[in-house]
Amino acid sequence: MYRLLFDLVFRRMDPERAHEVAFSLIGAVGRVPGLRRAVSLVLRVPRGDAGQVEVWGRTLPGRFGLAAGFDKNARAVEGLAMLGFAFVEIGTVTAHAQPGNEPPRLWRVVEDRALRNRMGFNNEGSAAVAARLRRLRATPHGRALVVGANIGKTKVTEAADAAADYATSAERLAPYADYLVVNVSSPNTPGLRDLQAVDSLRPVLVATRRAADEATARAGRPPVPVLVKIAPDLSDEDVDAVAELVAELGLDGVVAVNTTIAHDLGPGGLSGPPLLERGLDVVARLRTRLGPDAVIIGVGGVSGAAEAREYLAVGATLVQAYTAFVYEGPTLAARVGRALAEDAAVTAGAR
Image (cartoon, rainbow, N blue to C red):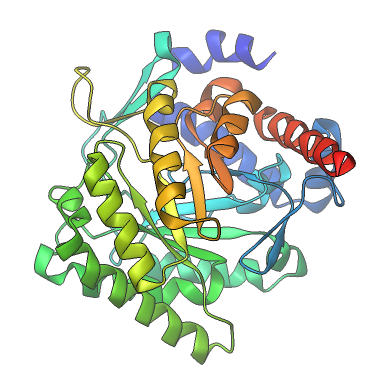
């Protein structure tokens, strides 16, 4: 049904407009407890112990989550969890509100079931997003949800001031997030990817970690995990260098990978199936270098349970998708969640 709806309706709409229509509907339904529960039952979202996993000392309802980019301002977390995403990564959020790049800035690549975007971190700013997360966490249901916050550099902030910019967002968001992701890998903010170089990345990560720790301590919360998100276009040597820095600083993990600029379709980063092979390679390389304990979130080219299993097989702790959500529709998360829960049950039964 969704594929028919996509072909007849959404595909004929501007991609950004179609996103906003679907996003608003998900957010609205998710805010109504009775509707929220009914949708989860209809979709057969896994419940109870099925597929649960312990990460960062917390029980997550599953291993499959939504990647950053879909809910930039934490406006639909309840609705997205309703659909079966075990965790939702909001953002990318910047210290200051910004409109992002001029449209058009989002394109479908239907033949590859991919997306190309040059959004440019359009968001309401970390103060507004923190206030929204604070309201979410004020309810028992909101506190039970697993929410990550992906933070990036404000476009107008000079590279020399990047560490302070990230620290501002970390300070505001850490008390309300289950984990933070330092995004230095989007291709759509000029100069951002230069921060992946270890000498530039170190002060950003140190400042983010310090600001997050101080904020959670003031709030009476335990330290929030901090991860870094890297690009698929890094060389193997640069991936190794980032892994060494993560280990040296005692960070909690890596999100791999962001969109790629290795295409000839026009400006912006490409996401979806073309990323799968490189994403798997990077995750496997990170696992080898970081050892068994670091959390690695695999993302890029996950179209369903098969790709999620591939990421887990090469060393991912958790898996995310975004582009497939656009093409597969609202049943995606529940379907993948059930499949991974069944895998976990089989594994447990074989022990």
